[in-house]
Image (tube, rainbow over all chains, first blue to last red; front, side, top):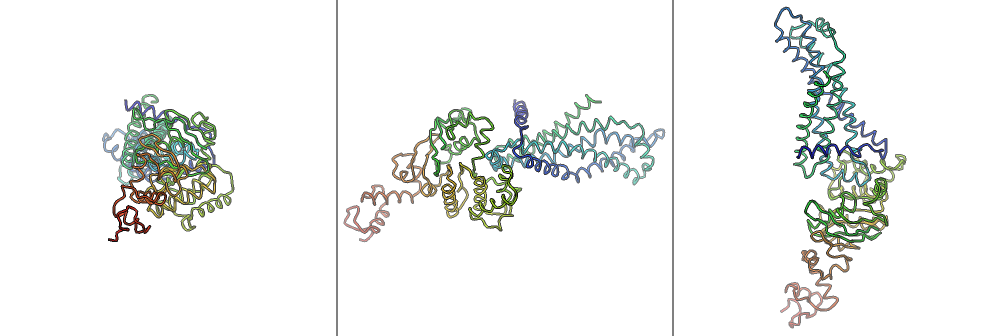
Length: 245
Length: 289
C-alpha cells in the first residue's frame, strides 16, 4: 500500500509543474545553476569512475580470452561494447543517483524543514516548477552528456591500461574499436541515459520535497531517495534492454 | 481586512481547529495567542493558504480565498509578506540576495532601483551595510529575523504574517523585533497577523488579540482588556507569568484602591510601601512593624 501511495504522490508531483513561470529569466538562471551543479559538479567523479572501469574491463577481458585463436582486437571490441552498452550509462547513473540524488533530496528536504519552500509559496511562486523542474531538465540535459564523456573515457582508459600492462598494442586496440561497430548501441545507451537521468533527478526531488519532520527525516529521505533511484535504474535497465535490444 | 468564518481543520480524525470565527482588522497588529499545541500555527497556515481548511471561509476583502482561481490566489499572495519562526532565509544566498529575490521575481525594475529598495528596507530594519554580503549562517538569530522582515516587506505587502517572531530570541532582541513589527504595521498600513505566546508582545503591540485554546477561539479583545478578562482559561495562560499577575494587581489597586485577596503577603507589603497606605487594614503600612 505504501508503495502505491508513494507512486501516486510521485505522479501527482508533476501536476502543476508545467505552468507559465512567474519570471522566465529567474527560471533560466535556476536551470543554469542546476546544469552547473549536476553536470559540471559531477565531471570529476564520472571521469575517474569511467576511466578505471574501462581499464579494468580491458585487463579482465584479456584475462578471460586465453585462446590463441581469438584475435586481440576482440578485447577492444568487448571493452567498447560493454562500456557503451552498460558500464557508461548504468554504472555512471548509479553513481550519480548517489552523488546528485542525495544532494537534491537533502537540499529540498532542508528547504522544506526550514520553511524556505513555504516562504517561496507565500510569495506566490510555483515551487514545483521553480525548484524541481529545473533539476529534472538540467539532469536530462547534462547526464547524457556526462555519459557520452564516460563512454569516451572508458574506452580511453581501456586503451591506456591495455598498453601499460602489455596486454594489447594501442594500434591493435584502435583497429578493434572500429571493427563491426554498431551505431545502434550508442543510440540505445543514450536512450537509457535520458530515462536514467529522469529517474536520478525526479525520484530524489520527490523524496526531498515531501520531507516532514527534522534533520533525521532529511537523512532518511536522502537514503531512501538513493536506494529507490538505484532499484528503479536497474529495473529500467532491464526493461529497456528487453524492449530495445 | 481578513475575515475568517467557521474555520475547521482536521488531520484524519483529529480536529485541530473547531469552527473559528474572527476578523483581522486592517492597519492593526492582530495577535493570535495560545499555549503550544493550541492550533495557532495551523490557524495561521490556513489563513495564509499554506494549508487547506476542512471547512469554512477565509475572506480577503470580500472575496473567499478558498474559492479563488489559481491566478487570483497568486495575486493575493503577492500582497502577503511573511516572517517565519525560523526566518526561512535562503541558505545559499547572501542577505542582500535574499531581500532582492522577491524584486527579481516579480518586478522588471533595473538593478540600481532594486538595490536602492533593498538598502531602504534593510536600513528600515536597522541592518548595517557590512552585513549585506554575509550568508544567513554568518549572522545572529536576531539579525536573521530582521533580514526576513526586510524580505517580507520589500514588495510593500498589504498583509504581514509573523509566525512566532520572538522564538529563540533573547528578551531584549524580542522587544526590538516587536517594535519593528509595530512600526512597520503603522508605516505601511499593513494588516499584521502575528502568532505568539510571548506576553510581552501581547502587552506591547497587541491591538487586537485572539486567544486560542485546544483549537477553539476562547477570547477576543485588546491588550487593554486582556488583563481584566474574566475568562479562566485565558487568565491561566496570561498569568502564568508572576510579573503579569503583579501588574494586574497593581492596576486593580490603582483603580479600586483594594488589594486582591490572592496577593502574596510580601507583595501586599511591597504595595503598601509603594503607596504608603494601610491597604489591608491591619494597622501596619508595608513591612514596617
